[in-house]
Length: 345
Figure: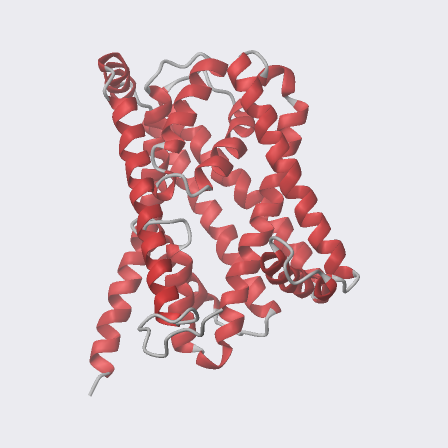
């Protein structure tokens, strides 16, 4: 093979070229997500009957149920703060609870506006590292462990409802088949998580072939598992806190649904929400917008007999409830910015 020209401005291992390709790929993905988001919202809103049903449901809304949704969402945020504080302590990063709360809400605020589901996490870790630059790695790991255990508990809840309520989901052939696919995906995720845990427990990760698919992801995951193994008490307690966090998250959407219709009961909403949460978390659209609305609208209509359009209204109102809880984070962020300006010479 002829040697590569030394004057070639883009050698094979040029890191700038790699970053450029990565940036192009990221923009392409974002573009596709925007197309999916806009397309789904247009498809949901272009039907005049659906829009009319949404107006009727909104006019009849029971605001006491909406207040209950706000309270439940606040409980969800509370458990989220307690979990993150626990993981910070697990990594020997001692942050006062008031500061943890402020950083958590700043992340919640940016989660509402930044594309992707991890934008808020990046912001809170950024400010955490500014205050504790000597614990840069610990800050990232605290959020990574937080995400891992949330996914683990969500997978377990999704599988439990998919199995225990399979006959209810099978009322609709389309929904029943969707739940089977969902159950297979969740089972595959559960097997993958379990396999990576066993590999970590038996110290076999480093023996995996270098060219093996997903090896890098398994190695990164094993580091998180190793942390959990070394800190069993904190990890188990974090998983325990994750359950009420997800239940209160789902309950907030149940309360919103009851504000617009009496046809949705608690168990049915608890059964639907793991599917909606898992699918809308995938990088299909911007922050799950459009996907979440389409799923809730279809599932509540088919399984609970709710008028089309009401499910979409439930999704939008549910996210508005969490947007309200993100607003304190905006205030904390502006206060921090003003304080930083005063400190500058």
